[in-house]
Length: 137
Image (cartoon, rainbow, N blue to C red; front, side, top):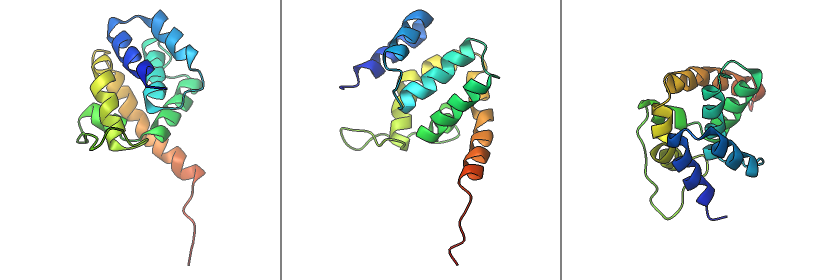
């Protein structure tokens, strides 16, 4: 587990080699990282599945894994580099790393970033509905 698969998927995405990307994603079907979840979302979008219920669930899972990715992709949130030799799972530095590596593929896919950022309010509402505030008083 040295993260080589993340570098590989980042190199395959710009080549628009859907077959190899899907093969790589399938090799790690249980992967829960932001890299994998957001990449699955991009592939679903590219495949015309943006409005599918399964894709909406996937975007929700990706956002839950790292809510900073859409903002950094869209340029509405400042990137933040890691200060060490690792990234914080779910952190801004992880999102920055993902956008640095996979952002060009998102930007090269017409409408993908707008689609993703328009899904964020839905993710936030779903998260609020499943985790309502508790009264501690």
